[in-house]
Image 1 (cartoon, rainbow, N blue to C red):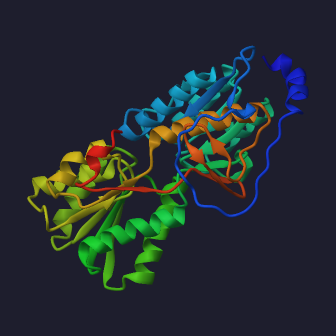
Image 2 (spheres, one colour):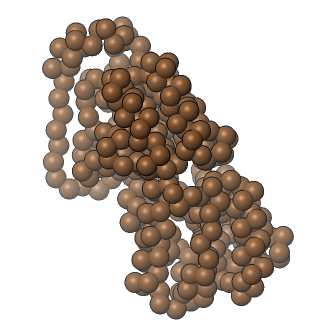
Length: 342
C-alpha cells in the first residue's frame, strides 16, 4: 500500500480545507458529503490504536467507537493496550505494531517521556503518529486529541465538589497516574480552582490508582480511615468514582462524604441513584474512539485536522495550536443518568 504513495499524493492535491473564527462547539450527528469523509475502496489502511490500559469500561467504550469508525470508513483498526497502565508494556506493543506495518499510530500515553524513542522510530519509518486522551512531548507526535479543554474540566470538577460541600471542608483526590500528562494537568487545575475560589476547602491527600480499580478502592479505604472527618473525594480517573463509592458504602458514610469525578455513567448508575455519589462528569469515550480513527484516516489523505472541522458522527472540533479538542464535558446525576448508556 505504501508503494502507491506517490499516486496517492497526486490525487490528494485536489483536496483542501480551511476555516477561521471563534465558535461554540455543537454536538451533532449528520452525514457529510465532503470528500474527507469518504475512503477510496482501492486503499486499505491499518490504524494502530493504543490505549493506556485494556479491560476497563472507559477504554472498552473507546474501542467500540474506534472499531465502528474502522468499519464505516473501510480501514483495519488494531486496538491493543497493556494489561496494566505501564509505559514499558506500551513500548512493546508499539514496536509490534511497527513490525506489522501500520500506517498510523494513535496512542494514549502512560508517560509523556518514556514513549518518545519508540514513537520517533515509528515516524522514521513513515508511520504517522499522534496522541489521544493522554499526550507525550511534542517531538514524539504530530498533534494531540484532547477530549475537553483541561482547564475547563479541572475547574469544573472542583466546582462540582464545592457545590456538594457548600464550599467548605477537607477533601482528597484519587487519580490515575500523575505521570500521565492529562491527569497531571487536570489535578493542577482542580487545585488552582480550589485556591482561587474556595479558600475554606483543603486538599489533605492526593493518591494514585494507576487506573486500577482495586488500588483506587484500597486508597479510598485508607483515606476514610486516616481522615475520619473528610467531606469529599474526587475520582480523577474513570475507575475512581465507582471504587470510592464502594468503599464509602462499606463504611456507611453515604451522605457524609461526597463523591464526584470522572467516570462513565453506567459504572455509577447505582451510586448516583442511592445518593452515595452526587455528580460525575465525562465525555463520550465511544465518540473519542470514533474521532481518533476518523482523524487517522484523514491524515492518510493529507487532510490535517483544522478548527471547526465537522467530523461525521462527532460534530465540530476545535484546534488550538497542536491540540484538537473534541467538545465539552457532560455531567451525570441521578436525574439524567438513565439517558446515557456507556
